[in-house]
Amino acid sequence: MATQTTAATTGTAVRLVDVHKTYPAREPVHALRGVSLDLPAGSVTAVVGQSGSGKSTLLNCAAGLDTPSRGSVVVGGHDLTTMRPDDLTRFRREHVGFVFQAYNLIGHLTARENVRLPLLLAGRQVDPAWEAALLEFLGVPDLVDRLPGELSGGQAQRVAIARALITRPAVVFADEPTGALDSRTGAAVLQVLRDTADELGQTVVIVTHDAGVAASAERVVVLADGLVVDRLERPTAEQVTARLLAKGR
Image (cartoon, rainbow, N blue to C red):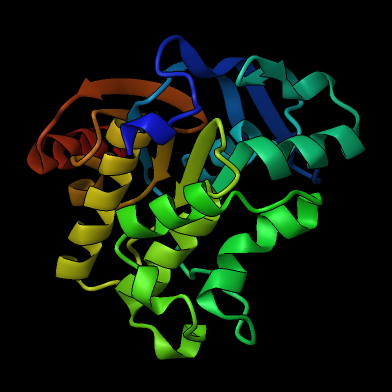
């Protein structure tokens, strides 16, 4: 599978520079207060924090789903904060992959049709060799003709990961990707995401509240009150929990 890699395996895949996000209200909500991050290409990073810490806002801004109030977001060498809306939509479709807790598979489409959907939306042709290698890598080649309702949770999430990877994105953002799975199946999906970074050169960013999930990443970024308050390298689940509790006080 390593020969299928197109994403850069060196350099910085995602860079946030002094990113602020404020939501207007009677009392403005400062969701991000100056976040700066460099995420290496081909790495797996977990973003953790208590509820309200800003981790979902961070994911949305880093993925180009939301626009920072201030600062810059660079993905794959492209500054998302300077793009026009149509160009940003096109960029996301072609260079960013998403994996969600709820899978978000289309119920009346087969697994194969779900995987191909991003290509269809982008008006791109399927690369049969890449599709076959990807499905084999994820362990779902025999499930492609099934509907989502005929898949287990783990199988559905693997199909969702294949859909996220089919366009060969610069980075894959996973929002609580194991939240709907039992612990054993969740561990298998996390292994797939780690293998994705190692074998396919993809950069993976996992947003989670689960210390065990976070500990599966190479590095952990801890948020509190819209700020990066800690960075951990290959921590244990106990270390992540301790930092979360300390920063949550």
